[in-house]
Length: 277
Length: 178
Image (cartoon, rainbow over the protein chains, first blue to last red):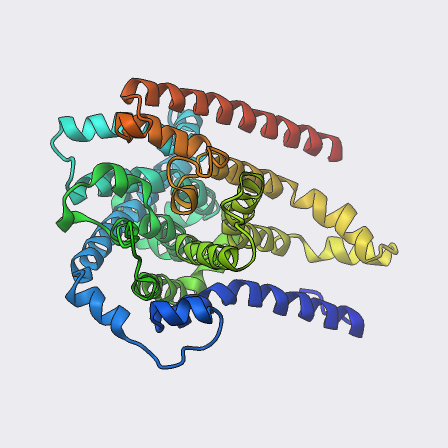
């Protein structure tokens, strides 16, 4: 980092950063404030603080709409998918980065091509497959798709990261009689922790927020995820906006907590791996 | 923003539509609907892009900047001659990711203007067209899975050519610079 010396330059850069932060935080503020109002307040004074604070949105979520089911589904699906994504991509990247075998680069390109070819184009194929293997309308269909969705970016980040771990480390472990599997578990895994956190966090957002695949693959009410259930809150004749924003506030809490927990690793992970152009 | 694409975007939608009721129908007018939509969608990629760029600029060797400054490079000279060339690959990655993300955009369009691309198909993009043809009932514009697959194939062709063009462009630029 270079210290910014000139006073006007410092003032200007702070102004720009404050403006940007406001731009980012304003919708969050608006979301939270709106969740504490009723419909009349929302439309008469949309930007002000709530006059009387109304908690009915939050209460209705769990009494009328049974959001505990949707939250449970979302959490289960997200956690299982993330676990598999981290496990599979770290194993695959380890093999790709540390072992020589034929068509190694080809396999790598095959995985990473998923970054460029959007998975949504295969939706019809996915739907038909899911119906054929009798997974349609179950959380497992979502989990499988989300794992596939996370693999390209995961391998893209982890491959470079693992490749930069010096070969001498693994070799000395080999001389000491360490098995290949133990090398992965005892040396590679601990050293790539920041990158693993990066993969988890970068995939958490699209998986948690995904609307498209639940919309296609889920029919029955008790397997719906939060984004899908939220879309149904927009009624044909009347929408309880306080309730909608209460869901949105609740749904963004896990994301923020997750991000705050892992952000320490996150930045480190991105700067070290994958970014070597 | 970065950790909150869909939700905060949904929120944005509401501010826009509330303002629309007060001032003018931003989303109801075929002329303004698409630009507004583009603005909202562009928002989604702000945070992600900034993270990528920060990581890239952080990775630039301090000594190179030092050397440039000794040779008398100004603030803008530094940006133009040192920083921009070194993060060019990242500009390429970000461009391609955003291109692909935008081209298959669906969630925000669906939330803001339904799968029919209201008003009057003016905000109908590939994502919503694909959903409508493949998964809607016939009276709402569905043509069945076959037609949906055709739309998806066309999308793939466009995305593939677009990405190839971008990659070609950035590789050429990089070759010229180095």
